Length: 394
Ligand SMILES: *[C@@H]1O[C@H](CO)[C@@H](O)[C@H](O)[C@H]1NC(C)=O
Ligand SMILES: *[C@@H]1O[C@H](CO)[C@@H](O)[C@H](O)[C@H]1NC(C)=O
Ligand SMILES: *[C@@H]1O[C@H](CO)[C@@H](O)[C@H](O)[C@H]1NC(C)=O
Ligand SMILES: *[C@@H]1O[C@H](CO)[C@@H](O)[C@H](O)[C@H]1NC(C)=O
Image (tube, rainbow, N blue to C red; front, side):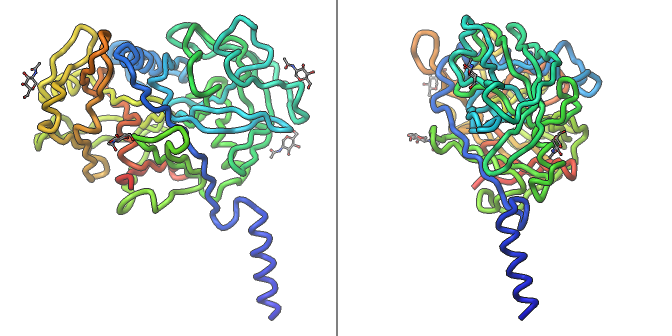
């Protein structure tokens, strides 16, 4: 009897403590439908991706210093967003959850009235938060079109029912050009590792783990490729949701814990292996699949694509069902993409619909797997064990 009472009280205590019983915290993602509206956006999406990874020549990502450069030029990169709140009482923000960067920033209430991107979104007012702690340091993140800059602050960040204390983040006073004007999010939650963070600030997820808010130091993405604003998928903190994928997750170790970088065993197009032993990065902050030059050329010519002067490959929209499956081999398992996954229909400059290959050029020797891949394959980002896992999304 005493034992039972003891268990019961333990259970009640457990209910009151979010980290107990491996509780999972679900953050609904909003999907910006018809985001890939135009060819211009497709182009801008590509250039912003290149700027984000600071790609110059065949530079190696591992030898480069912290991720000082990242770009989001337009809605192309901003498909999935979800809510957080900062301060006491909480000030709400809609945020982009980006595994391809590692800083958290929101617009500041003190930004200039002339800065449209800032004025269009919710702004963090430090004077209205009793838990705000000034930091004093300046921060700047270089984007293709200019730099995002402001000051650092420390405050409480709430996400779902998780309350992260003493989180350092950026209050943006200046947001460059038109980059963030039309976005469905106010700021970015970088989910990469500290090694690529400005000022080496502990990223939000690292704080969450350090403060034992999650049982397992894992988050996972379930992205609906054909979602809606209200049902775009889910970001889960603290583990994985077995109902959202088929079979079991294939885990591979990270080759470098900065980006979510891992080894790609090989790539197969229509039954032929076209490359082996490459590095890849899982990036929820882009929709595209960026390939190294050699693979970019091989794949797109195997697809019968017509190259354009903008590094795009045009595909014949009426012949899409004849295109091959393209298989990524990761951890010895096959992860295939069908033409419906990798062909993007976009509105041409003259209003007609054209089909473009999602395989875009990365002038570097690594792959970026964006939402085209992560939407098809449920992805578990296991920071605790420095590994990443994939399984077909349900
Ligand atoms: C910030 O909050 C303070 C305190 O609530 C308020 O007086 C001030 O007007 C707010 N500033 C802005 C720019 O909204
Ligand atoms: C946050 O900072 C305060 C003041 O430095 C400290 O007392 C508190 O323990 C910290 N909380 C966490 C969860 O780190
Ligand atoms: C996506 O949604 C649209 C509108 O609901 C529908 O017409 C289309 O068939 C869906 N496509 C897929 C691949 O599910
Ligand atoms: C696209 O494919 C259709 C059907 O196979 C063919 O009739 C048409 O000529 C092709 N269009 C182009 C531009 O090659």
